[in-house]
Length: 480
Image (cartoon, rainbow, N blue to C red):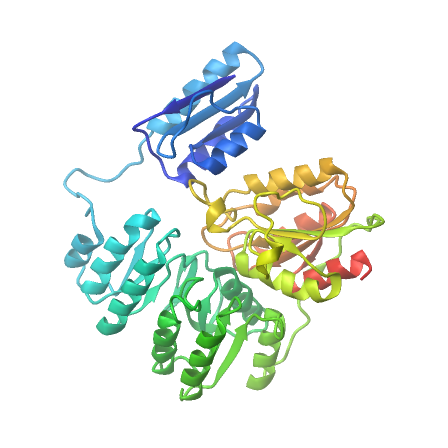
């Protein structure tokens, strides 16, 4: 076993995930974790029996390995060193890349949009550079203080530009996909989305119905909170209303603050472009239903959404719902659909404060975990890229013996795992209870909806293109 902490060494979470996967695939290596020493990663290391003996700090690099013998261990440590020190080709020495957004925009006068993806506390400085240069900006970073978000969006409004984010994972602007967007056809529907995976679900269902999108303008998950007040949503609505390619506007979000929802409603009522809402709430818990209503209003046919039958596994007596999600909005939707039937559903992102799960992902009863929550992505890649935490939870559920129906989301598209089914199949193939998957994506995505659906179904999962349909199927299996 080798466990070390290194100071003065940094690599981003995606790079470290790639190093861990490559070294873990070596013969003779039985466990590996190469990650920044955040509390979450230290907890994961402890669960693997690879916790460091000394106190660790989040800015240190943790290298933890177990191998079958000393020779394999030494070779694995060397492989880590080689992978960490490898450098990508950056072009000639004459082409020195700009070090800030401000310098980059000064050199690229025609660039209309900047993308910021740096640790949250530093994101506002780079985003403000873009706003000051009169450019819209997508802030992919999470962990941005809310007061920074309010100041940034106020400045953007004054400058007549749009701030998408912070924590904006999905956007499509003028046909260009940003973040975790999917390959969808162009069309007349403009989305304003305070939700990344919600926007992906809606745009993919529209694509399956033969209807495309003009733009998908993400606003960040907190935009419709009372603290932020819907600042970016209101600006995005005005921009889509003025866009010739947009004939319908659809709002997609998690449950908004009531007073902000009212303000958005008043603004929407004054738009020249027809407006509808897919904002989740106890009264409207279903993104698929919102898409179907929009299609009917447009005079378009509502298709039969694709699905794949899985293995006919017996539902254990007393089975409970276990939802392990990578998308926060999809997790919220699952809870909103399931709770009226099953009763209380506990979560790390609960619908009610008293149902907070904390970090006890193995808790008994009905549970939905959002593994994409900010608290679980500090120093780690998003679960749509790195499935490690979710795979650990599935293994823990299987080992617990608790009777269950397992509900999962799998989200395809640019930036996501190139083969999410490949990682999930070994974890779900031999489970003794039913597995249900909401598979969000299109045939045009790099992973291919049908290819992923067929692989998951062959491993025994029941697969649905609609997350709400998957949730209802899982609830029906429980017998409620």
